[in-house]
Length: 174
Image 1: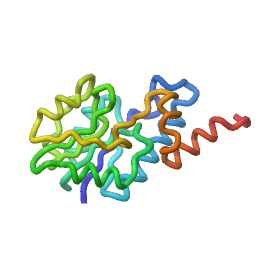
Image 2 (image 1 turned 180 degrees about the vertical axis):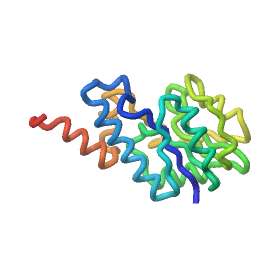
Image 3 (image 1 turned 60 degrees about the horizontal axis):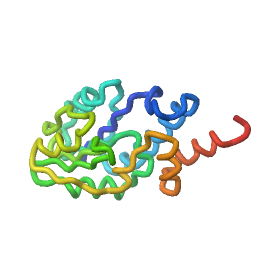
Image 4 (image 1 turned 135 degrees about the horizontal axis):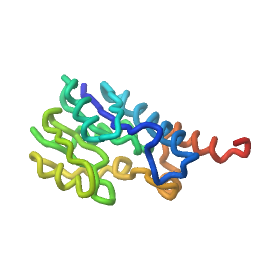
């Protein structure tokens, strides 16, 4: 059974979303990622402002292999996507799911000790250089949410918690 680590900055995450929507949408997206992850393995939400440090700390407690690291802003993720990421891990290596901007949305690690805190611009290429690696093209893991336009683009694929949060935010009672 794998360990799945989900880095989460908390309610101040998603700075490019309108401030009045940020906390509710961030929590809803996290809930969708956690729901999928719990179907696959032991799930740890790694909270903290430093994504790399939070993931490193969470993985230091992981005894199970392999390990997945899946960002909290992937509200379209499904169990099948996580299983695909697991199946993409090369022996002794790393599977990397890149975002459109070259950052990293998800990692599949043959062993937790392969992780290094390399997040930031261009991080997907840095992760790919760490060990035997494979670029995994899994649309629901590649499609992250940074803006309202991203939510609209993904609307038909959103998980139930994110969909409910959007409906709640759209309701005239707010």
